[in-house]
Image (cartoon, rainbow, N blue to C red):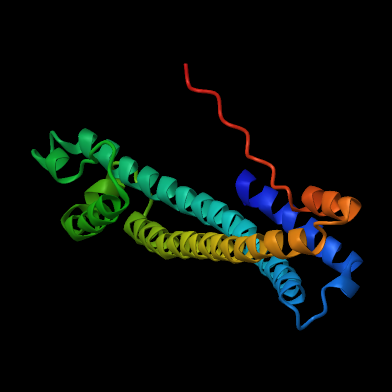
Length: 217
């Protein structure tokens, strides 16, 4: 929830309380009563979607953490093969062109490269082991590939959930603002001759403005 949404939510809370305190003046079937009920419903939605949004941020952070761990494990496994291939180039000319890792490679590129290594490895398995890589290292590489590939959908799902909750939260805020604007007229008219009540309502319905950010020097 951003600052603007939070300020509006806080206003809705005050308006709901004002409606509770003056329920006799706004029967449930009246326009005012209906809009105060709408404010209460919107508050419940905002609290639900804000919780979903916060959970989405936590889930996406956890998913990104898992993805980065899997990516680093896979990257390290690839670099072990690349480093070893450099030592093998005198026995196998051109092997460093087969086993190399580009800089700044993206997710799809990382998976494609790792799978290419798996395809190219069989003729050199024994030689790589002779040059010091662990026995059956290609099995460990495949496991790293599988773990990294599995981490990608989790990240996408967490982001989708967060985006959906953020959109739902914005829709609920807009719905609340419609009720807020209707109440501004209805309550203002109801208490136009009651200075105390009108002042209380103006205070309750006031929406703070989000502070402006200082310009970047």
